[in-house]
Image (tube, rainbow, N blue to C red; front, side, top):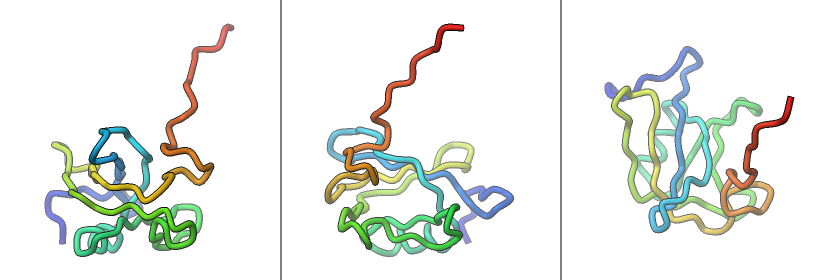
Length: 108
């Protein structure tokens, strides 16, 4: 259905979620064909939960929906970039972004 998107062996594609206003990267999720179709056809962002093995409507439980602005596929076709307007914190921890922990090299 999506000739420009290369789903992996599990039928998933990485989805980078970015705040359309600030440019901040909010999270990384995965979409199967159905989640991508729902995202493209509606105003909300959908994912495929690898842990629960089911579709996941982001915000359905928390109220922190991601409102889709645009969706682009990368040059290799193995990732999509979804620009959004977040309706609250994106991370389940309550942080605006899932990328709030700085990684530093540990001393040997």
